[in-house]
Image: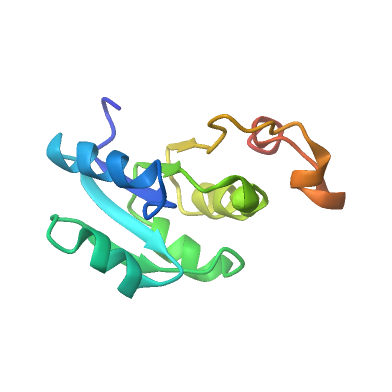
Length: 127
């Protein structure tokens, strides 16, 4: 992720998030981990030189504040939380984030059941 130094990660405590955080920290990126429960995330990564911010997916103001000053947001949320990415995308845009990398790892993001009546793909939402 050349050109991006300050990275926020949403979903860091999950299966994909843990190794991602460790590798990006080793590579020297300035990481901010966004979580609903900062105690849980601090327990997992407290020994690493990372920042922790607490924000709920439906709290637009807290997300904007968490993303302010961030170059890129990486979302590694699980499939049950894919719909929450829409609020992350909106907050990232409003906070001036340059890059948003959505969690689409092995998920059928075109499936309407993931988004309910508000179906839209992440790619379409970001246009």
